[in-house]
Length: 193
Image 1 (spheres, rainbow, N blue to C red):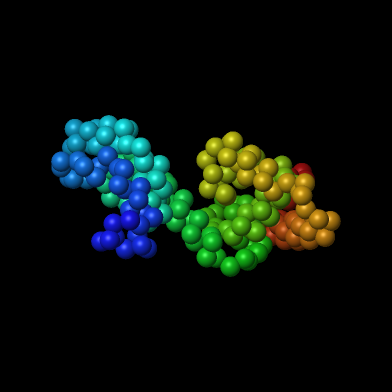
Image 2: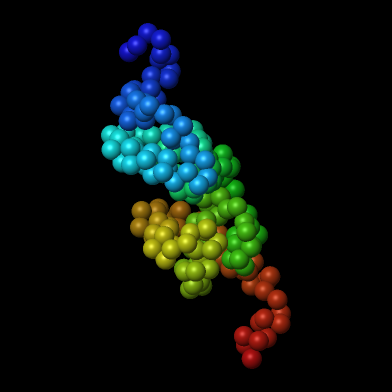
């Protein structure tokens, strides 16, 4: 390990030694301004030959580096990765909460920032009520049918204990009861008529 490098930064530095961009004659190539297509395409072409593209992209996402071309992707192409990482950080910092009213807001299509427990309850609700995948996807902020099905499958009870299943059933029953209580009367009449 070189003496001038702090041991704390060495893990990040180690992969950067092998980066193609490290020896680029013009560092501005990695930070093209709008409408500089030649610079952008040249940087992307160089990234395509880089042996540490995956590490670069991971570091850019982890450290929230939003500017320039990193990991073979432009700023615009990385935007969704940064948003996903920010949501994951926020969820990890959110204490375990279970607010039935937030779940109902999500069911109604309103924007609600759900905890992992609330998302799980929403998936159980979707299964119990045959909620269309588009509605569930909108509530979970997942855009594809495959993503929704994957998320629903993750809530299966195959490995749960009977006590955990009973608690889950009780939470679902409470949510269904609350949903029935909050359903407008005019909607109930139209459905039953």
